[in-house]
Image 1 (cartoon, rainbow, N blue to C red):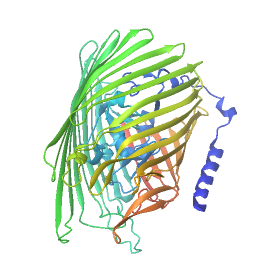
Image 2: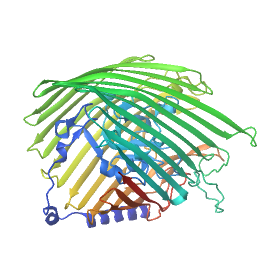
Image 3: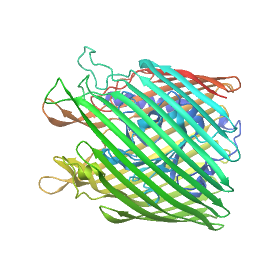
Image 4: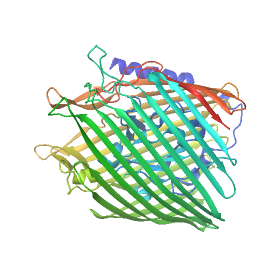
Length: 639
């Protein structure tokens, strides 16, 4: 308890020291307000943030360029309302996305607006390790239930990862080379270009690290082996413009990685290894006309995973298990301007899931989703969206979800917003049909979501402050209870977020946030009576983040990032007693420092990215190691 108080005291002192003064904030001018920033994910077509009441966090191109020493999970872990379990554990360890306290399967991942999925995994959650950060241009994080717009899994929100598309001249080349702690090496090379009739981008990334022991070594002998990780990734897309207003963009993404892992919490093993492959192919198309745009999307995800582990019955031997998943997503939709202040969006989505594994042969399901939304656009500051989606599931039949999202802007500076929506998450193939623990009688999880808040942004973009309160209730929550999966619980989550950006001067920016979330599950006890208890495993009630960036010159930039994670609970399987035990994880702080210097008029940049500079010893997941002080340094170039 004393240690946690010390952590929060240090955080509050840092907030006070870094708070901007009004005098400095009035010295320079910046021209545009964040309320006027154009986003895509909120409505599936470009729209100003002032015209939507949805809550978005934007990671822009500049921030991504300054994240070459991170991976995507570490960058997301710095954002308000997001915790990535495993982000700072062994680099090859699996990562779990917790958005606003929801479990990892409740956040939908998009690549360029198209859902990505792994039907072979439990819950279908996409593996963030598949995507190198070097191939990403922008990330839009859309919070709150978005099932009316995006379908299953979008219960807590959507993370839209927008990849690099084209250059600003006929031919350009760019690259990155880094080296860091744990003998970590990364190289990236890319080419891009654009003309009147075609644009293109292609990139290759190689990453290799010796890593650390995945399991925490408490023996005192430091005898646990390191669990290394290597990855090769390639991406290419070509945009063709055969006629006025028409763009067709085929794409291919491929990622292959290999790594070692351990037997479990506190348990080393030199035998286990894994191999994963991800192939994402497809095409997107847009035809723009005077009053709208028609959009076409198709993508296929092919994921293959192989695990080699020690044979439980023959400890000197190993056994292999394989999993394959195929996910097809096809969608056509259009947005149309009915009048000056009225718009409509409508379309239909088709999804096909297929899984094959060592235990399960060729299980499939499909989903057909027509959807429709109406928009009121800036009628004396008032905007709203009313939308619905009818889901026809090959296993569960029909489900209808909807959303209502009004907002009101006062003097182009203050935005009041609210959102009420329903959502759903369908069980995945492994949960339904696995012969060992599957349950074909599972029902979809259904949610009711309410959020509201206020945002204030000055016209000169000096100050941007947003406060949001949210509530999420989920019925038919799927849990594992021996011998398999069942619909058993009700989950109620409640929280709020306060986030701010201060452009103190043209050279100094301070961003800060506070997030709170609590979650309670209601279940039946042995007497068939309801019992309620807190259950946000590995997710803190309280988190605070501060980021300070300062440009000493046009070429020299330094930033520092602090994030404080409150104490958390976890569940630990004790291999000695064969019992699952509740444990408490202490609060901790992470401080990272980044510095860069540009040469040759910005064509060459050298940088250093220092992580956990306080060398904190902590757990993200009980019984598994986290990285102490570590760093990456390197060069990037663009010609």
